Image (tube, rainbow, N blue to C red; front, side, top):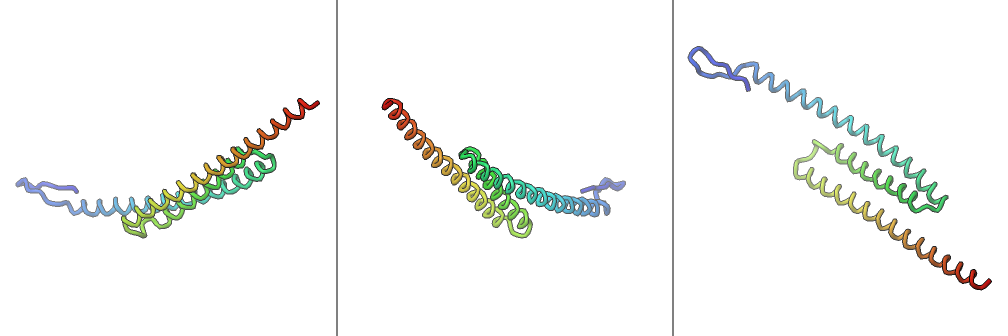
Length: 148
């Protein structure tokens, strides 16, 4: 707030100070809205890219029998889901009170955490299965090698 002094040293509010403050607040609000719109556009683009990446990686990984490539594709699925959660939060921002914002944040964090745990469980399961299959083939190879 801008104060001005008169000749006797008393301070009064400048009539321009309040207008300047309102102008700054309005400008800030406009920039914030633009920022949220831009963030939403970028997040839509990111989710779209991640979906395409997931489809290509999972298809190529299944064709090649590669756990790593399928895992990479599933990670893209997790990133897409995380992006959808972010879109949900950005679209709701400013339309709910602070408590609801915090509850949304907690739900979003839990959801993303669960999806990462699911991805980790998949990679672990597939790795164990592949390791067991590889050990069976190795033992069978030793049996055939000694039999001849």
